[in-house]
Structures are given as structure tokens and as C-alpha cells.
Amino acid sequence: MIFRLLLLTVLVVHPIQIPFIDQAILTAKSTTNMTIFANQTCQQCLCRFYSGYIALSCFSNDTCELFYSYPRVYIVHGLSNARLYFLQDIFPNASECCMSNSYVFQQLDAAPTTRVNVSRPRCLVIDNYGYLVTVSETTNDIIRLYPANLSIVNQPTSPVFPNDPSSISYYDEAYYIGFDGYILILHTSNFSVLANITTASLFGTRDIGLLYSGQIMVVLSTGNNYILFFNRTDNVSRQYTYLNQQLVTYSSPHGFWYINDTYFYVTSWATNSIYSYSATNNITIWSENLFINATSNTSSWGGNHLTIDDCGRYWFALGANGIQIFDQQRNLLKIESGIASYIFHILLTDDVMYISDLVYNQIVRLDLNDTCA
Ligand SMILES: *[C@@H]1O[C@H](CO)[C@@H](O)[C@H](O)[C@H]1NC(C)=O
Ligand SMILES: *[C@@H]1O[C@H](CO)[C@@H](O)[C@H](O)[C@H]1NC(C)=O
Ligand SMILES: *[C@@H]1O[C@H](CO)[C@@H](O)[C@H](O)[C@H]1NC(C)=O
Ligand SMILES: *[C@@H]1O[C@H](CO)[C@@H](O)[C@H](O)[C@H]1NC(C)=O
Ligand SMILES: *[C@@H]1O[C@H](CO)[C@@H](O)[C@H](O)[C@H]1NC(C)=O
Ligand SMILES: *[C@@H]1O[C@H](CO)[C@@H](O)[C@H](O)[C@H]1NC(C)=O
Ligand SMILES: *[C@@H]1O[C@H](CO)[C@@H](O)[C@H](O)[C@H]1NC(C)=O
Ligand SMILES: *[C@@H]1O[C@H](CO)[C@@H](O)[C@H](O)[C@H]1NC(C)=O
Ligand SMILES: *[C@@H]1O[C@H](CO)[C@@H](O)[C@H](O)[C@H]1NC(C)=O
Ligand SMILES: *[C@@H]1O[C@H](CO)[C@@H](O)[C@H](O)[C@H]1NC(C)=O
Ligand SMILES: *[C@@H]1O[C@H](CO)[C@@H](O)[C@H](O)[C@H]1NC(C)=O
Ligand SMILES: *[C@@H]1O[C@H](CO)[C@@H](O)[C@H](O)[C@H]1NC(C)=O
Image 1: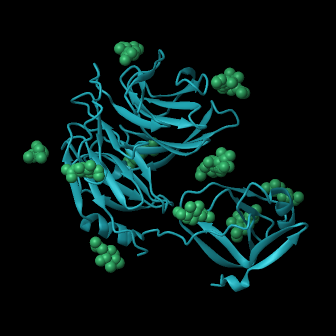
Image 2: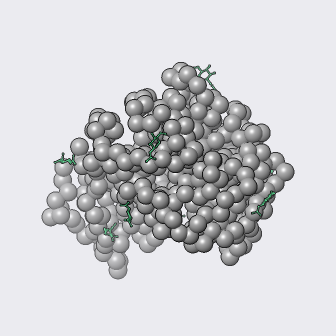
Image 3: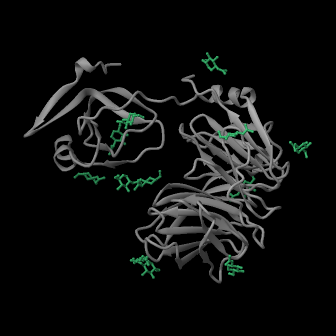
């Protein structure tokens, strides 16, 4: 609408000059780190927050939105009596695309695919080498693939575990691998074991999440319906000690999706649902809410994992029921069942989608044509 640079004005908050656009705000369309302050005038927000944040949108109702960094996908809206400040004299890059629903769904049918056989692959992660990594429940090892062509990285050789691995997460040069009753943390360079963690109430490890820069480890214990919390003992070692547990109100907590340190989602394998968790002021107590119940569109259990894309769409990997895609208002947009026979996990990067198929024993790569369509 009105964001020609000519309209950029400079406000002098002595002795700092802050450029702004009048009658405009910034709206994030991708995951972003921002905070909102209500009941603060624009002047109050400017005085309190001009350092530490990159942009400020002021609304006419004394609400401020402060951005720590620019979102990858955004729009600048015209809005009367609003003002958008660029607090550090840094302007955003051009917004990247957010593919429309119809375009992305058409891409799912049309995109070129690459497939590789992997025996019972579980979760998919990208590590610090840029490898696509999974664990096989049949060969009991870590499998690393070149993401571009899905060929297997042979060196170094993964250890063969004595038990079936059921999940893998990645954080800061380490793989966190879930087994029935314990979690192994391995270095990504040479697979050396950094820690072996367990607690009496761990029964069937599924997803492992990390909060507070790896300080808190969240473990879904599917066999007894607990979410377990562990605390890292120091920031050198990878030792974690058991902190707390919370019983969930449904059966088989399975997939974890991080939003921020005080908010995450958990899928229920046995009820094909997604629950949200929001920390109360004490991080060991979380308030649980049913978020999506996909039962009515399914015929078997398999609420495996949730993936949220940059446009805020929810991709629910439901095993033999395919992928169910919901919008931010939780409306079902599409059921995609053509790509693979049993959707275990979906990993999305900018314009590539990877899927692990636990029953057909495949990893699939789809190349989406990421244009602003
Ligand atoms: C904002 O201020 C008004 C009047 O002082 C008060 O009634 C209201 O509760 C405040 N709202 C918030 C979110 O603090
Ligand atoms: C202020 O206005 C914005 C944009 O219209 C709205 O999203 C927000 O909820 C409002 N805040 C309050 C406290 O009324
Ligand atoms: C713009 O993009 C460049 C290159 O990707 C990046 O280095 C830079 O940090 C970006 N600037 C902002 C303000 O995000
Ligand atoms: C992959 O597995 C399928 C089904 O078992 C088999 O038909 C195919 O030959 C395998 N492909 C390779 C390259 O091993
Ligand atoms: C796959 O890609 C990797 C890295 O780009 C390359 O080293 C390897 O030779 C490729 N493998 C095949 C079979 O093309
Ligand atoms: C880890 O600990 C479990 C018992 O909790 C044990 O069965 C397993 O062998 C240990 N693994 C390694 C690699 O130390
Ligand atoms: C977690 O461990 C750290 C030491 O690494 C300690 O400072 C902190 O108090 C512990 N947090 C909780 C909640 O126990
Ligand atoms: C965390 O995410 C929730 C849900 O989107 C949001 O309501 C909350 O404000 C966020 N908290 C922080 C600290 O960003
Ligand atoms: C947002 O960014 C700030 C500054 O980089 C950081 O301290 C904070 O932890 C971030 N919050 C989230 C939810 O990522
Ligand atoms: C959090 O709550 C637990 C359980 O009520 C309590 O043991 C712990 O001391 C609390 N921690 C803090 C930091 O308040
Ligand atoms: C989810 O939906 C199904 C059928 O649509 C219903 O039977 C079930 O009670 C719902 N679950 C919850 C937790 O509300
Ligand atoms: C990707 O989309 C652009 C714009 O619609 C189109 O010109 C191009 O041919 C497409 N590329 C492929 C490989 O489909």
C-alpha cells in the first residue's frame, strides 16, 4: 500500500534517530520471535524498548508489538493511526513466499519425488553436517543420508544398538535417541555416547524435545502416558537429571512440536489428536488443552507427529490415514494420502518435504517449487 521508502520518516528521540513508516504495521506470516505489550503508548514503548528489538509496530489502541528479528515471511499492512519503527536502522529483506493452500496442495501431487528404501525408518532430523538422519527399527542403527539425493553416508559407521530405537532428535551436535527404557545421547561426529539417561517412570520413549537452549529435556513416555522433564546438570556435559513428570489425560503421547520455551504440542498416537501445553508460571506444571481431534476422518490409530510450516499450517502425520493438513483456525484443509502408505514423520525445509514411511520402508523427498503462488 504505502511503503515506498520515500515515506520513511525519521523520528528523533534524542539523541537517537529512528526511521519509521506512518500508517503501517508489520505482520509476521512465518514463525517469529516477538512480544506484545498492551496498555503502553507508543512513546512508552520507544523509550523502554528502543534497544534489544529490531522493529516496533504501534497500534492506535496503545498496543505495541516488538520483534526481536525480522520474520522470514511477512507483510507490511497499511493501518490508520499505526506506525512501524525500524529501531536499529536495519530494514528487512524482501519477504519470502508463503505458498497458498491451493498451490502447495497442487505441488504435493506434482512435485518431483526421490525415494530410498530404509527399513522401518522413524523420525527425521537434519544435523550439523546437513545430513538427513533417521533411526531404523529393523537394523537398530542411525542412518544418515545426503538430503539432495538420499544416498547413504557410509562413514563413520553407526553403532548397532542392542534394542530397537524408537525416536531421534537433534540438538547442538548431538543425537538424542529414544529406546524403550532409556535415552542415549551421541555425538554427531563419531557417535560416541555422551550420556545414557533413564528414570523409573520412563516406559516407551517417543519424541524428545528440548527447551531453554537444551537445558530442559521433555520426554514423551508413551507406555504410561507421562510427559517427563529432565534438567541438564551443567552446560558442558550432556547429563540430565530427572526433574518432574506430568500425567496426560489421553493415551499414547507420541509426537512433540516446539513453539517456544513455554508452549508446545504433543500428539496422541492412540486418539489421533493434538494437545497444546502452556507453562504455568512454574515450568514444571503445564496446562493441557485439546487442540485438534482428527478422529472423525481416520480409520486406524496413528497420530504420529505434528509439523507446522512457515505459513502456520498444521501437518498431522497420521500413519495409514495419510497427512491431514489444518489451518491456524484448525479447519481441515486437505487429507493427503497419495505420497506414502504410512506417514510416520514429516520434515519441512524451505522448499523440500521429507517423509518417513514406516510400513513401506521408505524415505521420500518432494521438491516443492517454492514460488509466491
Ligand atoms: C489497561 O488499562 C485499563 C485502564 O487503566 C485497565 O482497565 C485494563 O485492565 C488494562 N489492561 C491490561 C491488559 O493491562
Ligand atoms: C489493539 O488493536 C489490535 C489491532 O486492531 C488488536 O489485534 C488488539 O487485540 C488490540 N488490543 C487491545 C488491548 O484492544
Ligand atoms: C538479509 O539476508 C542476508 C542474506 O541471507 C542476511 O545475512 C541478513 O541477515 C538478512 N537481513 C535481515 C535484516 O534479516
Ligand atoms: C525398494 O523396495 C521395494 C519394495 O520392497 C523393491 O521393490 C525395490 O526393488 C527396492 N529398491 C531398491 C533400490 O532396493
Ligand atoms: C549424493 O550427493 C552427495 C553429496 O552431494 C554426493 O557426494 C554423492 O556422490 C551423491 N550420490 C549419488 C549416488 O549421486
Ligand atoms: C544404557 O542404560 C540401559 C539401562 O538403563 C542399558 O540397558 C543400556 O545397555 C545402556 N546403554 C549404553 C550404551 O550404555
Ligand atoms: C537445573 O540444573 C541447573 C544446573 O545446571 C540448576 O542451576 C537449576 O536450578 C536446575 N533447575 C531446576 C528447575 O532444578
Ligand atoms: C509462546 O507461544 C504461545 C502460543 O503461540 C504464545 O501465546 C506465547 O505468547 C509465546 N510465549 C513467548 C514467551 O513467546
Ligand atoms: C527471542 O530472542 C531473544 C533475543 O535474541 C532471546 O533472548 C529469547 O530467548 C528469544 N525467545 C524465543 C521464544 O525464542
Ligand atoms: C515448581 O512446582 C513444584 C511442584 O509443585 C515444586 O516442587 C517446585 O519447587 C516449584 N519450583 C519453583 C521454581 O517454583
Ligand atoms: C474426538 O472425536 C471423537 C469422534 O469424533 C470422539 O468420539 C472423541 O470423544 C473426541 N475426543 C475428545 C478428547 O474429545
Ligand atoms: C516453478 O514455478 C515457476 C513459476 O510458476 C515456473 O515458471 C517454473 O517452470 C516452475 N518450475 C518447475 C520445475 O516446475
